[in-house]
Length: 125
Image (cartoon, rainbow, N blue to C red; front, side, top):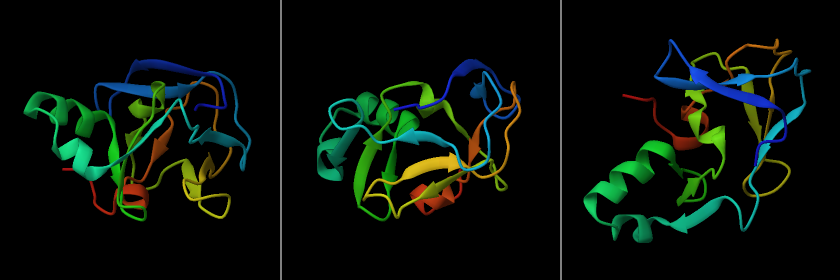
């Protein structure tokens, strides 16, 4: 679940993106997996869905390489785009899902980005 105020607007990176509504200080928690809100499913359940459902789920969610499970953010955090030098980093010392924090100070109006390699184990196509 998102822990900071954000805006969902067009992005030059990829269609829509998530942008900071206000400045975010380095180290501030931005997103944390929230049970009964976000989804954490066995990959087999994803694979058992009809093709179109799989396509949508894989577009908006990801397979966590550490856990071997499918994760879907239930809020607009699913629109965070990839960057090789992101402004968000994951801290997995908190719990198995971790918490995503600001890797540096983020300005109001700046797009929030994450390195997909850090959660999926693969770069985007």
